[in-house]
Amino acid sequence: MRAAVLDGAHRALADIDDALAAMRLGHYTRCRGCAGSIPAALLRAIPRTRLCPTCHATGTDPGSR
Ligand SMILES: [Zn+2]
Image 1 (cartoon, helix red, strand yellow):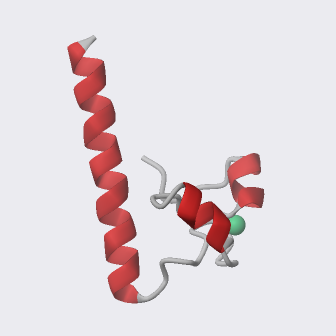
Image 2: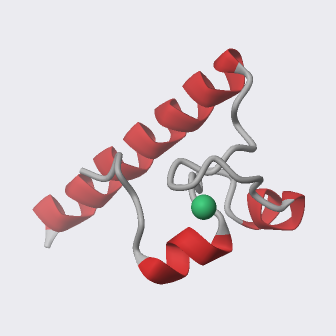
């Protein structure tokens, strides 16, 4: 149980690091799957998301670990 919580926390921190790196590089609002725009409302709701709704629905994530 504790290991699962720690694993989830590590994954969340890695996602946040990815989002911060994308902000620094200026492509925070670009989808990692199709390079389209990620809607601002989605970024406000889930700031660490890297996929647009379409790619999220189809499971397209070339950078997933
Ligand atoms: Zn996309």
